[in-house]
Every structure is written in structure tokens, then in C-alpha cells.
Image 1 (cartoon, protein in one colour):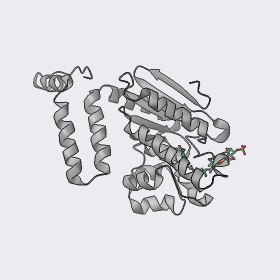
Image 2 (cartoon, rainbow, N blue to C red):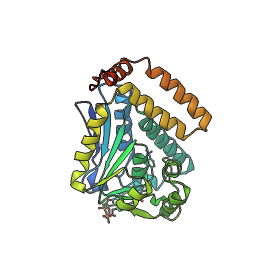
Image 3 (spheres, rainbow, N blue to C red):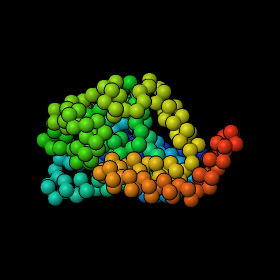
Length: 259
Ligand code: DAK
């Protein structure tokens, strides 16, 4: 598939999706959503892909869904649109590889919802976060009411969801929405640094760790602990577990083979 609205690259295990609709502030239209889903489908379970970085440009991450497309939807169309958004962002969230959102500028509506489906968010000082749907007479429909609440708590989430507040990067950092706050010009370098660190981790254990945290966030403790038990024991089926523990005992750095 040729991409018109995104730029996709894969280099040294690090995949990158750059949203590229600058004239519309990177708003997510149907074509862009399809392209993102196509990449996510193509790289799912691909062992070559160790990390995915999603980014925009130096001015904007994503200004939400393309309002011009959404404006004429009827309830059936909106329902389908919502289902599509849930499907894409769940696939993104479940990707075997860690996903980093590298953010500058407005990260609104569907843009924030996409960032919330990532494992880590690195923001520049220009980062601006919000769910402005309420100002359009609707509510967030790509997971925002759920994922934001789980991440920062109901009280703070309601500031964005109900009041339509837009928060700056510093506030987003204080809320725990952003993992790392850096200067705009350092965002991509920091994302690459984090990606390099993640590439050095044993891939199978890393996948299990991600699965456990994501699964547990949506489960009661006992169910989460059962899941942890299954993945913990499965990790002992990997060469990297043998190597990691042997290296520790021999007081040397492990050489993981991601198996
Ligand atoms: N849609 C379409 N065009 C947009 C846009 C958007 N969301 N955001 C900006 N633009 C366009 C503007 O219309 C303008 O176009 P021209 O007039 O130049 O033709 C251009 O980008 C520049 O915008 P501004 O003139 O407003 O520039 P400013 O610097 O003053 O402000 C801004 C930038 C990003 C802060 C502002 O434009 C803004 O607040 N934008 C709207 C934010 C918003 O309401 N977002 C939509 C929320 S609803 C789904 C995924 C997600 C969703 C649904 C489905 N699937 C995966 C299926 C989620 C729904 C939403 O996100």
C-alpha cells in the first residue's frame, strides 16, 4: 500500500509512523486511519520490529479526527466510526513491540486518544493536550473517556472530558500523562534513546511485561495475578531467561537473543 498521509520507515528494529497531513494539522481522516491500521497490521508480531515510534511534525502531533469528515455523520455512521477507532487503537495498544508517542504541539481529540494507546509519551514543551469533543457537541469516541481516566484518574480526566480544558506539557507531566518532558528539538532524540534502551531488552519478556500491565489495568487483582503467573512461568521457557540469570551469576552483561 502506498501511503499518502503518513511516512513509514523501519531502521535497525525501530519502526516509525510520521503523521503527515500538515495542511489539516495532521487531523485523522479515514484515509489516514486506514494507513495507520495497515502499518500496524503489517508489523504485528514481526520480530524485526522491536519498537514503534509515532510522531507528527515540529508544530503538531495530531489535531484530532478530521472534523470536516465527521460533521455529517448520523448515529449509525458515528457508531461505525467509533468502532473503527476502537479497533485501530486496540491493535496499536496490543502491538507486541513497545510504542512511543513523540509529541510536539497540539495533541487533541483522536490525537490524544492515539497517544493514550501508546506505552510511553515523550513531549516537547509545546505539547498541548485536550479532548475538545465536548465543545463540538459530542464526547470522545476513540477510547479517551476510558484510557485517560485509567491513566490520570477520574477527577483530572473530567477536566479534559467535561470542561474541555487543554493542558500544557508541564501539567500533563504532573498528571502522569507524559512520561518525559524535554525541549521540542530534543523530542525525537529522546524517543530514539528510549527506543534503543528498549531494543536491548529481551523481546519475549518485554512483550510479556507489556501484556501483564495492560491486562491488569482492566482486571481485578486476582485475575491479573493469574495472568502474571502464566507469563512469569512462560518466561522460563526462553533462552534469554537462562542467559539473563547466568550472566548475573557470572557477573557479566547478558547477551540476549530475543528467544
Ligand atoms: N479537522 C480538520 N481540520 C482541522 C482540524 C481538525 N481536527 N484541526 C485543525 N484543522 C485545520 C483548520 O481548519 C485550518 O484549516 P484552514 O483554515 O487553514 O484550511 C488549519 O487546520 C489550521 O487550524 P487553525 O487555523 O485553527 O490553527 P491554530 O494554530 O489557530 O489552531 C488547533 C490549531 C489544532 C489548536 C485548532 O485548529 C484546533 O483546536 N483544532 C480542532 C481540534 C478538534 O476539535 N479536534 C477534533 C476533536 S473530535 C477515530 C479517531 C479519533 C476520533 C474519531 C475517530 N478513528 C480512528 C476512526 C476522534 C474525534 C475527535 O478527535
